[in-house]
Length: 483
Image (tube, rainbow, N blue to C red; front, top):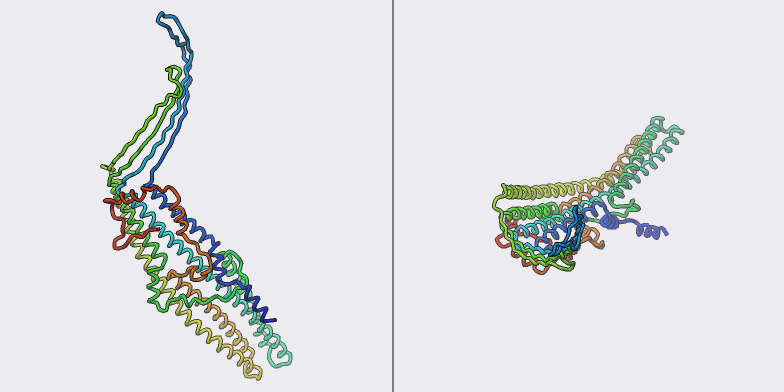
């Protein structure tokens, strides 16, 4: 019966995978970043409109009623008055339809498209960074709750042991085996243990609140966390290699540099000519009773033009914009180096913390083992008069402290392992909760990128716009695309 109850309790326990899945689906920070990424995707759609036509239509209706100050007389050839009018009415309507298409922009349109695609890729890395941060927060809050639950259990057990110790001390005092001093020492230790119990309860409440904030619900019975050893690198060198390849901050900085380089090309393209075509269709229908024009008499017009323009003098505006773009590219290039250094520092710190926490865990396990033996020995020696009450109380305090230290060490080792994975860029739901349906930013990108405004000649115009255009490539690198 006891085994069956244990199995039911384990089956109903909340696992770390459950917490990760819930946070992945509902965490506000993660949901907000996904919305920001979808907004960034629209930048590519907007950049592609430079290769697509614009169509505008307009329509108007007008009417005029004029009262003459003096009546207007109409006479025949004999000078006789045939009609007299004191007012005149006129009405008109018109409509037009125009189509415009940029044929060549000196590379500015293609550069803006390259920059927008790089922004999308950088945004995906930022999203991955937020995902890692949220999952890391879930792991930390999960093990914090379990740590504080264990700390509360140890504190409660310590109170129970000291309560029995006080009862025993009172009984021995009644028969004269110990003095009042021994009883007072037991009372003092019990009071301190109760104060520690209250502190443990407060710490657990704070950990539960932090868990609810990141996961979205209060923790229940939390199952032991699974091991992360299979995901960890075997050496610090392997960790360093994976940081350069996978760290989202480094990758985001690289894509931001690509976007900055493309915007330099877009600024340089301002010096190049622009060619555009326009076609228009219009008609006008009017009625004027004073002129004898009848309603339904239409004026129709059809127009077309191809315009080429090149800037000759802009007062230094274009040159200033080029210099601004270049400096921003320099800043982006420097940011890549800064991101690399920060990532290397992060993995180095995390790796050394992991090694230290592992060593600390081994030491604390040995400390608890030895302290238990020492406590049992002191209690037995007290029974035969070789140890005092204070010796037993000190041994009990050492054991409780050692058990708490071991619980903290286990938590620290797990958090350090997660920090290493986060610095490497592999703390993701695919590795931690592979059965959870994952959010794919590419699907959202494809939905908006291929659904609106595409025209058959768009690829041709993209190729034409690149003829003689400034290079959008980062020196020594290949420009990536969001496709």
